[in-house]
Every structure is written in structure tokens, then in C-alpha cells.
Length: 163
Image (cartoon, rainbow, N blue to C red; front, top):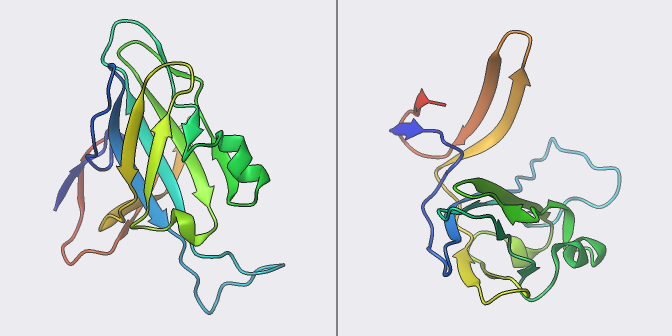
């Protein structure tokens, strides 16, 4: 299996008004017998990254609502443990909406709706687990290197072609 990493990990759907869903990466939580937690164990859910692409020659606002709520409301309500939501997507550029869902609502197979309350824009995204997912990335600026750890659930080996 060949993989070219451009931080676009899975093709998804196309949205309206120039903003596109360029990729979705879903990494489900894995709870093993060896894992110990201070409090309750992490419930079913996933780390989700939604890559937004703006092909237009002007910046556009990023989605402001996920399933009808602002991202911070999911954190405050205990559905997400954290989130990183961009305010906008630069002209010709990319931005990533990331969150760690910690309830079954955010597990693979779920469908979520992204919207922007400031303009007419809406996109549906299905959270699908990929055979190969990004697990960790570490940058070593002094050496000009990057270490990328992939989780491979597939049957064939993964070969990284380009970063």
C-alpha cells in the first residue's frame, strides 16, 4: 500500500460556497488491559481531524457549529475532552478542525454536520476509521527531521512516499 502524506488522510465530501472537506482522519480510542487511568476509563469515542480546504482567492470563515453547537460547548458539556477549531481558512489554503470525542456519539460510523452560522454553508461528514491512521508526529527542528507513527490495521505493509 502506498501513502502520500499531505495531511489529507481520507477523501470525504465537498461542501458548498468554495469551502471543501478535503479529508477526515478518525482514530478510535483503544483501551487495552495494560492501560490505567486515574479516574474513570476513557469512554468510547475517537480523535477526529477534519481538513478544510479553501480553493478560493479570498479567506473564508471556518465552520462555527458541529451538530448544531459551537465546538467549546461540546468540551464544556463533557462530550469532547479538548478541541482545536480554526476561525478561518486562508485563500488557497487549509485548516484543520480537531477534537477528541469521548462519548459513543463520536465513534466511527457516526455522521456529523458542520455549519457556519454567519453564512449559508453546511457539510455532512461520516466518521470512518481508516485502515491506516496517524498516531503521533514529532518534529526535530535542530536536525530538520520529523518522526511519523502510523497505526496500520490493514493486511499489507505501508510505504510512505512523500511528506
